[in-house]
Image (cartoon, rainbow, N blue to C red; front, side):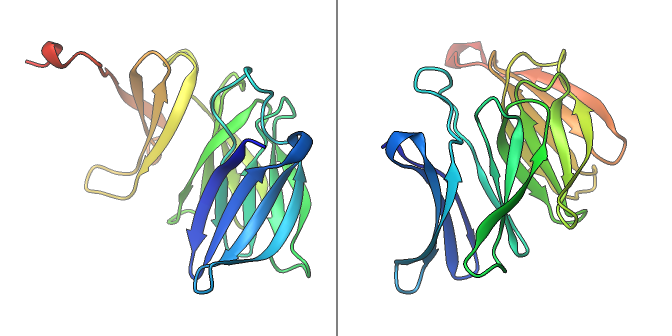
Length: 193
């Protein structure tokens, strides 16, 4: 067992995805007040083979659904319906790549999925309908996308930041629908002026 790989907390519950025996994963729903697992949902194989990728799947809760990115070659985000008794996987969304990290834009109810092997780089999902809306073209701007962050509404608009493996960060303006900046970060403290 490789243990937990994804976590989200909403209200009084934590949603923890864990890889179990023989690569079979589960989503544990934990009541925070009692610190007890109140339900477990079988997810199947969602973690890439050992040695294949060091980055795991992600977990994101929106409304009565939990989204779990499937880091296998399937290119899918699993949908767990919390309103089912018991909660269960009820579908999936094809992203076309290898989905990993996810962030939610609460203003638009859109979920942005870092999709490593999708030529575009980021897949956009509608949180209300659980449908794939579009892709955001980041590939070619950054090599091997590895991390994703959302800057919510500010005086400068909403931005999606995508960090690449080779220390580059792309700034994508969600309101304008285009890349508005790129920087290279460094691990060399002496390079900062």
